[in-house]
Image (cartoon, rainbow, N blue to C red; front, side):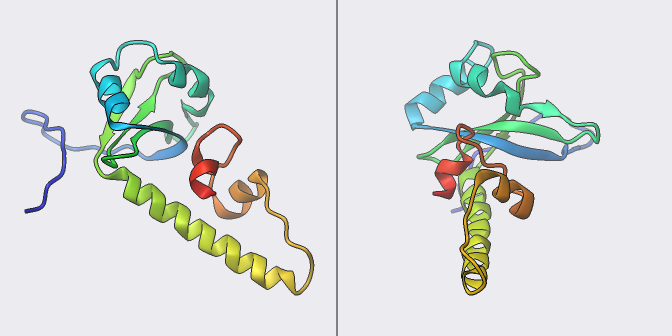
Length: 149
């Protein structure tokens, strides 16, 4: 049996996925995640703290915060539009596996580059380097750095 979770919409005439980028990840345990999912319209401190990572750019790409259930692997991608609650959401089943894989690919590239450059000079890694060279937004508080480490 192949089990997952999904959100079904009644009589949709078309499915129009929107281009999105995960700019920050906030991991939580199962109980906290379930509570969050039951209170989407309430203000949440983690959304308030990370709302600078949520916006729509001039090309229409939604940059969001991923509320991630570390136990089940499911998540909710949030664009709060500057509010402290989950104004726009997208349920993302099994997203943890995808995030872990993408970060792992970047780590492999970082290590490869470090080995290659070690013959020529000392290699140093910083957050700005991660985004500029590998497309991975890493800051002190966006949660992606913790996954990277």
